[in-house]
Length: 205
Image (cartoon, rainbow, N blue to C red; front, top):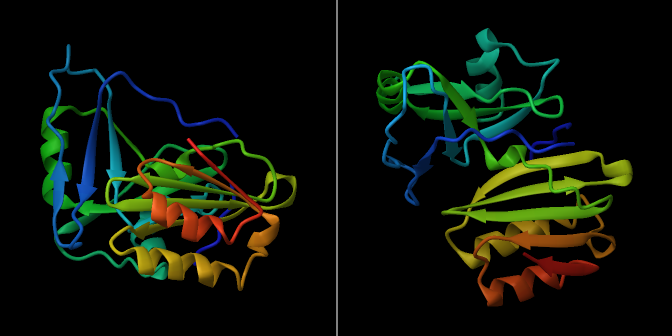
């Protein structure tokens, strides 16, 4: 698990597409590109991949992107590229995407802004866990005392047993029975019950 530091949500542009990694982890899909009114229009690109890392802004530098990803276990292949978001609450989302998709996007507009659900600031208060199901992924953020961000993680949502195992592992690090769980997105009812039993209280949105 990778700890991170990090109170407003990142801004949204009027035009948005998404890049999503497939369940098998070997391919990506790009949503249809919108018609832009002029070449200066900004296009927001939401990247959905488990190979996502939150980096404090004081530690991030563009020329260190590959190094930071490698240290997190996300070493770039020759056909991949690192992309990153604008700073949000003193953190940058660093992500891995296929180079071919980046080139396709750059051919559509020169004004790209990358984003990640991991940048969301749910504002749940201290001792809370935010769990967002997005496509085939689950985005998790853990907040401790004084709303301090203790953990930011993305895990594949393939098997319920694997998801439950991840949360059970978290009990060795955080006293989840003292935490509130906030679930958002399409979370199966059976899975909600299994995960929710580990927490003081569970809410769904």
